[in-house]
Structure formats: C-alpha cells, structure tokens
Amino acid sequence: MKIVHVMDYFAPQLGYHEKFLPTEHLKMGHDVCVITSDRHDPLLWPSAAKLLLGDRIKDTGFFMEEGIPTWRLKTKFERWPNIIWIAGLERKIKELSPDVVIVHGIAKISAVRVALLKKRQKKFKVVYDEHMTFDASRSRAKILYPLFRLLCSNLILTTADGLVGTSNVSKLWMNKKYGFPLDSIRVIPLGADNILFRYDAFSRETTRKQLSLEPDDLVFIYAGKLVAEKGPHVLVEAGIILLRREYNMGIKILLVGNGPATYVEMMEQLINAHSLTSSFIWHDLVPNEELYKFYSAADVAIWPRQASLSMMEAMSTGLPIIISDDSEVTERLEYGNGLTYKNEDAADLAHQMETLFDSDLRKKMGTQGRKLVDEKLSWSTLAKQFIDLVE
Image 1 (cartoon, rainbow, N blue to C red):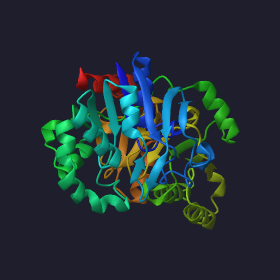
Image 2 (image 1 turned 135 degrees about the horizontal axis):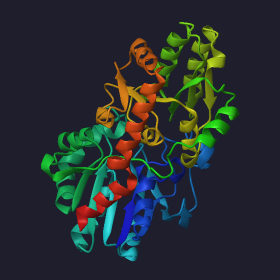
Image 3 (image 1 turned 60 degrees about the vertical axis):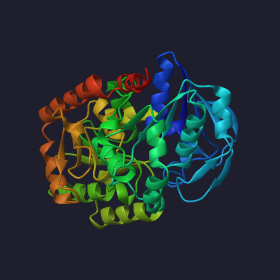
C-alpha cells in the first residue's frame, strides 16, 4: 500500500507521533513518504529545539530524514502558528498517487486542501488525526475554530475514511469544536517505540557518571520543553520541599530540555535562594533516540502539567511516572504504573515523590508501565490500527 503522511511541520529528530507512525508503516512493508513544509514549527523553534534542528527554514526537495522519505515543499505563506500554505501540495499528492493519505491535524489549511482534492478525485482514502485537547489549546488561531466548524467540518467529515483522536479528550474536542459525531471518531492513542525505549543497565551506569551522580542517588527526571505551560517549575518547587526536609539520602532533580531564558532563570534563582544548586541537574534537549539513556539513569519520571508523548517512552523504559490529575490522560496509569498529584500543588507532588522512595513500589510500577506499552501502546500495534481503518 502506498501511504502519504501530510503534516505542516516535520521534525523527526524530536520523535513525536508524526515520526513513529510513518516509521512503523515502513517496517510493515508499505511504500511511505511524508509531505511537509520547508520549515519547522515556530512553537518548537527556537526556544526548545534549535540546538537539534538547526535553521528553521530548510531546503526544498526530496530528503531521507531519520530513514523516512520526505518531500519538503516551499511555504507560500505563514501567518499565525499553524496557519500555513504549502505550495504544490495537491500536485505532489497527484504525482505520488497514494492509496491512503494520513493528515496530521484537522483545523489546518492542509487538511482542507486534501479534503477538497479527495472530493474531486476520489482516488485515495483519507484518515485525519487530531492531537488537540482543551488544556493544550493555546494558539491564537483558536478564535477561528467556530469559523472552521461552520465552513469546513462537513467537508472533512464527508471525505474522511477515518477520523482519529489520540485520546478520549481529543475525541471530545473533535466533537465539541468540529461537530463530528462521537461514534464517527476512533481513539488510537499515542505510544512508544518499545524497541528503542527499554531499560539499559550500561546506559544507566555511563549516563549517571556523565551527570556526576552517585550510585545511591534517587533521580526524578522531567524531559521536554522548559516552558510554563508544561510546569517544570512545579517540580522544582516540589523538589525544594523534599530537599529541605534533609532526608539522609541523595535526591536529584534532572531536567532535560530547553526553554526561554527568562523562565529557566526564574527556576534557577528559586533554587539558588535555597542553596540547593547541586541537587538540580540541567541538561540540554537530546535527540529522541538518545533519550532512553537518561530514563535508564533515572528512577522516577514526572510531568507536572500537560500530557506528553514522553510519558509512554519513560514507561517503556521501566519508570514509574507521576502526572497531574488534570492532565487529561490519567488513563495512561490504568495498569497501576504511576501516581497522580493535585494539579499545581507542589506540596502534594512532593508527597507523591516521597511515596516513591520505596524501591519495591518503584520496581512494581515500572514493570507495569512496560507491560502497558507492550500490550497496548507500542507503535507497531498502533500503526496497524491506522491500516485497519482503510482496509
């Protein structure tokens, strides 16, 4: 089967759904490529990803990116984040003559253009997927959702061979914002590469040495964008609460990622005010394929606010996770593989972290997290579900 994935922005170095789904379809033996723009998402670049992605505007043409055949087409215009016109999109789809087009993101110009092409030609099947949740919607373009629903929702609905929400909340979003009937939407969650993301004892030893960690240090890790919306400052506050209790143990907070200098400096100043600099370790964003080494080096993974794909990757590596009770993805703990804390309550987060001082409980939860990924959330399993929609 010839499958084309259409997305406005593509940064396979960072992982994400848009990398792993095409990769798994390639492994399944399908003829796969990505069509995207000649630039990176302005919401990721430069604060979080410039070190890995380089210049935001890229060359146009055909490239192999992380093993994925990729067509980068010229951007005709780009205004607000996620309002972008990719020149020649329809022409390239016609040229490739796919059996299936998978469009990543629904309230986008590219999705409407694919729908119009499908309506005219009817030569391929289309699956549209949506990651958006109520908590994650921050784009200034959200004021256009009512207009999109009025003008475009029926077009998307009538041309879709499959509508996919990546969580139950995304499904509800699609119903409330776009007017799609709930029974027309299939939930196919985000997942993890359970071959890449696995516990590795050698990586634990070498990475802990690299980070100057002691063998007995208890390491809590956050990996992702260091931005207020993700809430790493809540983890910093919780870490300070724990460290001021003077436990007779080494507690370390490892933050892997990059963010706006003013926000990072605010957290650093808070840490410095309590003279706890040595207990917090900052590390630049790393390529997705290297991230398992840092999870292997850690003992517990924490995401204080919004949902993150990295949650499943940490689970796959055998870590228990702590997430907000308002994260909209508490189903990711269905195997008893982690804990929730009261959203924004640093004292409660500290309490949950303290609960996981128990090494036996950490091991039990970590085992359950890996089991959940193996049984339900591996990309190989989820990629097949997309194929099932069109076969």
